[in-house]
Image 1: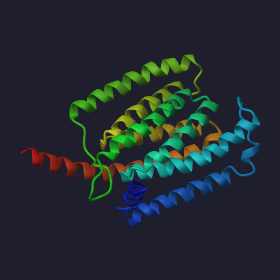
Image 2: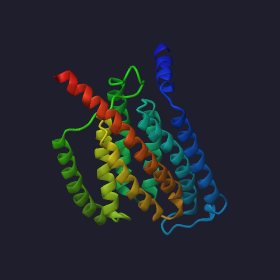
Image 3: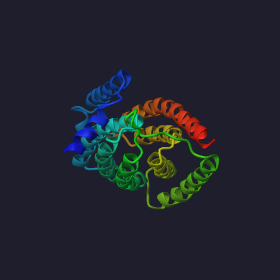
Image 4: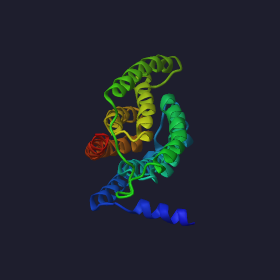
Length: 254
């Protein structure tokens, strides 16, 4: 019970007015827009490969996943440990949705993301800043950046051809998002600020992907639009804090 109280205290500490306003605003916007566009008409939508029941389930799950996902990324951007609790729920919903609409690559990476929530929770819990109540942010070495970039390029092409063979709706876009998310999650667990540059590109690709998956995933397209704005904000914040930590580490090493 004491550990639980301490965790709650840590998660509620270090919030600025902007953080709270941003979280509440995006949740209200995405809920309102998706309800307006997916109200009575949404449940009459058709899809070339889905039954009406599957369409309804996708619409509902997309709305819920969008809200949970927004909370997850805002908390992650804040460096809060609780982001991993919401990440578990978000990953489960994304597995179901992408399996239904046949975005197999993102479905598989959602399984991977589910596992990484537990890995990330363990890693972050050991590296929390006692002053800010957030995880410590750092930068990668130049060599690591080139290694990860090479892996991403190779994985995208190989996985893209595989996805095309199995009938994926958008093989190479799906392959890029899948590969990039795998790498971005590793960077996130390792607390590297560079993850946010990658998330920016992932979010742009995801917006296109879900906008072309018909109305059943409109909520997810809106979610990734919010993710895109959030990733820019968090990229600026993490870069600033990582530079400060880099300077601290450099000073200590002298």
